[in-house]
Image (cartoon, rainbow, N blue to C red):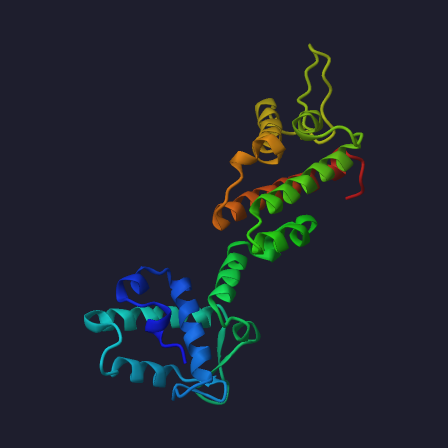
Length: 257
């Protein structure tokens, strides 16, 4: 059985964990209890009351003088496990059981993967990119995930505007969202929203072109985040660009609504 102190050795480190990180440690501990001598976990069922009663009265205290603080933090972590549906209350009694997803999280690696997935909710990503960015994102290949996301934006813009395959990147975005200018004999781009004021049309063109210059251009890979949360934000940004293309495509590219 993994004791909590074998997973996080001292109270300072434990109390510095975010609630979801501590919840992961607690879940690993509960799974190990299921395989060892622990009255709070029996036959795959978990008793919150038994766990905290035993832990609060534990002698010697696992985390010394900060034991009570640890108990409070663990209660927060337990509430998070239930709110995430990793521990589910049994309808017949006060015991809980590990959900299907909860059963899969048994190691630090499993916790890390789950928390990454939590940062990038698959249901909120545009379906065109979800399947292509999710696997590399979970593997920590953030540059690949971001590249794939913006590649799909590029393809969607090209198809919506019916541009040739050799028109790419910033030039493609500028052409697709071109602001009409009669004096310069410039027509509106196929995705330009002419219902917007001219300043906002320009801003839209800058938004798409700037995104590609900063994130999509291979020469600009130095700007690609290496932290999962920042990477998730960039992917969600690409997802939002795709939704803008979806909104403008029927009226600007001749597609049926």
